[in-house]
Amino acid sequence: MKLTLGGYSCAGNKAINQDAFAAKVPPAHLVNRKGVVAAIADGVSVSEQSQVAAQTAVTQFIQDYYATKSAWSVAKSAASVISPLNHWFFSHNQRNERSQAYVCTFTAFVGKGRQAWFFHVGDSRLLRLREGKIRCLTRDHLAPFGGSESLSRALGIDSHLELDTKQFEMQEGDVYLLATDGLYHHISNQYLSDQLSNARHCDLEQLSETLCQHALQSGSDDNISALLVRVDDLPEAGLSEAKKLAMELAIPPVMEPGQKIDGLTIRHVLFSGTRSHVYVVEDGSGEQFALKAPSAHFDDDLSYLEGFIKEEWIGKSLSHSNIMRMHARPEGSKFAYHLCEYLPGQNLRQWMVDNPRPSLNQVRDIIRETVKALRALQRNDMIHRDIKPENIIIDIHGHVKLIDFGTVQAAGLEEHFGHEKNATPQGSADYIAPEYLLNQTATFKADLFSIAVVMYEMLAGQLPYKTGASRYQIPDDISVWRYRPMRTVRSDLPNWIDLALERACSPVADNRPDSFSEFLEDLNKPNPQLLDRHEAAPLIERDPVFFWKSLSGILALACLALLAKDFV
Image 1 (cartoon, helix red, strand yellow):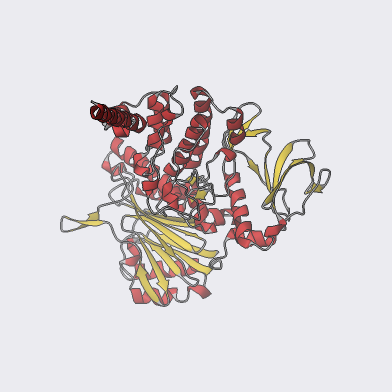
Image 2 (image 1 turned 30 degrees about the vertical axis):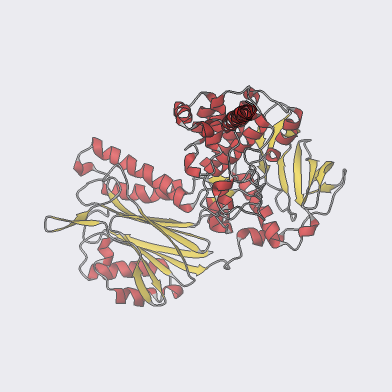
């Protein structure tokens, strides 16, 4: 993607310029992750400090936007910056007189991949020239006041900011104009169209100045600002960054102890299968890592290699003590592999084999650590989507680590890699939340479902459902997910634990806890609401086994009574 920027601003006939604009084309790696940003603001004239507000809004937005987590979506990144900015302005205004208020309009443009976004409040505008036609993409936030109009929404006016946002597709040759009212009120669409049609062949700063000077000569008595964004080149549709990298990198050959790759010495072969090979490697300082390389069987499978590259991107963007660290490959490496934290220990599946009837405290400790990892993913706008015992490692110190990022759904990843948001993940169907299998929208509650299923299995030695579901045999609806009360196999455990797991394992996402912390709370002490609901339920729902046993006993007694009557 190549975008060219240029802008101009002047005070016009006023003593102070209360407009401001800023734009940034960052280094290539940030262009791919966060895009190119342009922003414009117009301070309200009733305040003597509006120029400070406008300048702060555009510069702080850009600075803080690029500091947000790389895994976050454009929308989440922008919102996380604009909301605190508005709160800061509003708090300042509550403590100061109106003449010292920080209030300004704000319009930002973000271009990333083939997509663009705007974030807008107030009456600055974002306009687009496409195929010779001018179109205004934003709407003015104005309300009638004293025979004229005044701003109904702007930064600093209210503690709650109602922001207009929109995502749309760019086209090569598009020209975007961010403008304040001092410009667009005194310039016709025809003039704009004529001038912007020449944007591909001229300097954008010069063109911006031409637009502003024309508005001034046409009678503008306000500050005048124009910021232009020209779309010169866009990535090929459907060819993601991951696919490009996958085509450039070679799959390493199968390696043996003693061999080297990129200065790393192979020490042990941990695993060798049809999909991948995993080795223990050592660098020059003696530090050991796990190296995972794709199998040569997938040399011409671009989709598999794309997923492999995505997994590396996700792993490197995460940093948490309960998540396996993934390191960057040595600079200049021509091979496709993951360089990961080496975790000597065992996976949870083996732990379950070694501990067939664990105590509640043992299980809670492991689940609590795993939930910490899931909350870290949630903060990064990610859903793991393949929580199962094989992807939870317990190291030699008893510390829990979450591994395998191959099916992780990340909002920021989807924007520049391309990702089918609610596609069924290639994980184990025994642990996948029903909403994935039924093609419904999934949230972090899908991971909550999976970890609850894992906990149930740790305690009961079996799964809570017997659905027969798989990615190749998907149920038609959620009715097949019938929870099997755990007390039938673990009568030593308190009933409130069973109720907590039944809630978290609910096939209906809305019935699950609203947060991971709420789930942990249910595991640490009885939830009164769950207990009351359980006690009020019919016996067949509270204890179906006891119900049917009792009913069978009653029927048996009735039969005996009838037989006895026949003999009398």
